[in-house]
Length: 129
Image (cartoon, rainbow, N blue to C red; front, side, top):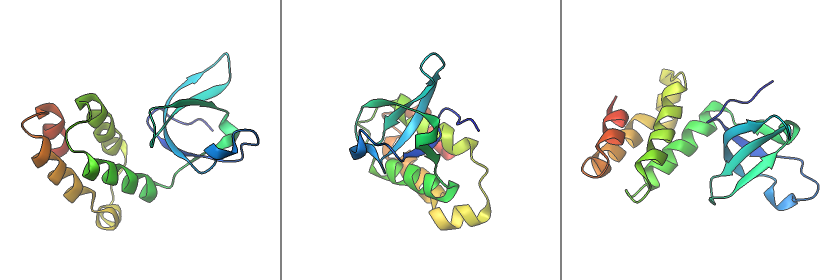
C-alpha cells in the first residue's frame, strides 16, 4: 500500500541506522528512482530516505494527538507554511465525535488560532474552520 504525502509515520526495522527506529516523521514525497519515501523527522529538520517496509502509518488517534501537541507547542515562531501544512493534514482526516473527544483537537486548534491571529492570519483562519 502507498503512503500519502503529509501522513505521519513511525520508522521501524532499520538494521543500520537503528537510532531512527521508533522516530516519527511526516512523509514529504516518494523518490521513484530510489524507491524510498522522504520522511521529515518531527524532532529535527532532517529528511531521511526510508523504504516502505520500514515505515508504519500511525493510528489516526495517535496522529491527531501528535498534531495537537505540535499546535499547542507552536509559539508563533514556526513559519506560517509549517502551521498550514499541519492544519491541512488535520483537515484531511475524517474527524469523528469520538476522535474529537479523545484528542481535544478542536480546543487545540482554537487556542492556536488565538495565539497566532496577529502574526499568521491565514493559519489562524484555517484553524478556526
